[in-house]
Image (tube, rainbow, N blue to C red; front, side):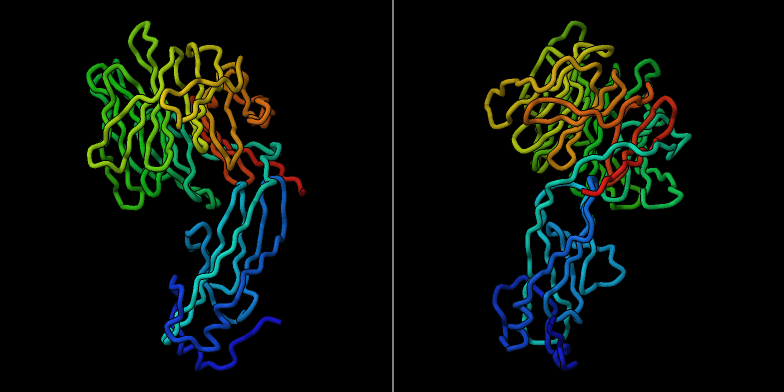
Length: 401
């Protein structure tokens, strides 16, 4: 049976929790509270998600703050003696709790445990429906929490919606001034998040070089801050982070150029500089990073062919290793947990890449011709159809394991 505090006076003699390793006034009650452990109960598991309840094995009448991977879970109605949480990605998670008690003279400890989620996969598609319509050329969908961000390239802006809303309302995040060169307009070609900052890759025009901007999405009326100017004749195609380093895949627009490059830049530096880490004769269309490996899509042209390859970022002169060859028109790659997914525009499908044996498994087939990007959230895929000016939502069949 779980212990309960029997005296209300004790609640008035305890400090709120801290990370201190030692008690400032060790009492029997404080020691007992600090001996509590986290109970883990798996309530349900499907192919797409796994739900758990976390609770204290003692003092169940106390309230607790709950943390996952050092981030406090804020969406609780009130701080609770237990936490219900659903995981949608494989990985190792640190679960922590802090008892909430006030006005006292002993220090309580933050208690943590580790949970490994390993068996989740993307399910098969059950239903596809129009999610948002009437958009100005949506591309590059990216999720941050419950908010889906995407580019509307015809109006040169980034918008977002909250996917938990029954009737989502599109809100403008940032809008950039349009190019004065009507024959060479620029577009926002890629998005990436690091913390609360959204990074935007913007293509070049005949007179203005390509640039990278950052936007603080937590403030009202955010402004785009220019942080990187790329060399002339270079257009960015994708962005990916490894720690503080931003990697930028690019194509050289010079006729007959065979110097398409991947740049990197330390965004925490007082003076941000770019360095070339890899070049190739084929166009660099998209990148994704897992650990020390950078995966890339290489294409001979815009209309056919392509391959998935990788390099090791620890190597001084990285050597290219082919993963999947003879793709139709591969366009985007994304890691969901430890699994890599690829959008093949030419064959109209999304495939999962098995990196152990370099094979693919179809996830969605028969996509429309204008399908340009995708983002996963639990048991759903949000896909942009730029020319049809909409985002569709594919609900996945999550079979019980």
